[in-house]
Length: 207
Image (cartoon, rainbow, N blue to C red; front, side):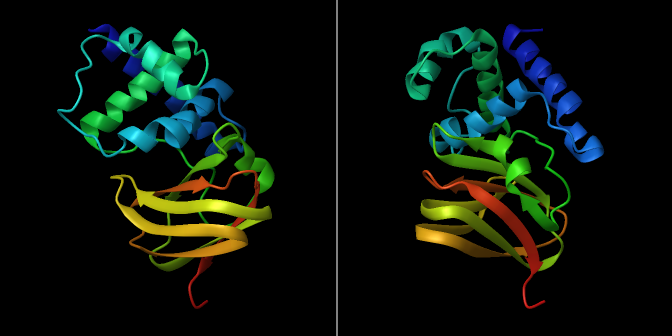
């Protein structure tokens, strides 16, 4: 088994052992594993999410990517952090899918600031939040901020197909509508600058 393959399996074991605890016990997952997922999806994926199979060789392992990762993160990175980001990058490029992440809980009702905070990357002024499977039909996802927000909101699927993309122009809140099938995972990518996400409300359109 190659070193990069071992790293991928190790990260998968960490995430599958910790992230399901959110749904099962309403507890936070392992902070390091969660931070790597958020960091990757708010910074690294900006460049790499559209580049799939055949565009990069992974034979050299994560060590060769260390300086590249540090350059784009803007500071030093530990070996475990580099290994985790490298494993997620490999997964995205080879499968053209998001790295599997368990959502906070079922996408209904209201998610409040406290449970959204771990999915925030203050350095990037951005959030990455797995929404899971939305109820079938036309659904509204209402975002409310603590101040005027500048940036953008994007929702995509497990296969990185964009289903909604909206600008934020000093908005205190925004409502996104999505046509959901009920069996596809969705992910929220939010660039809000200094604004903090106070809540997400899930509503049925027209309900």
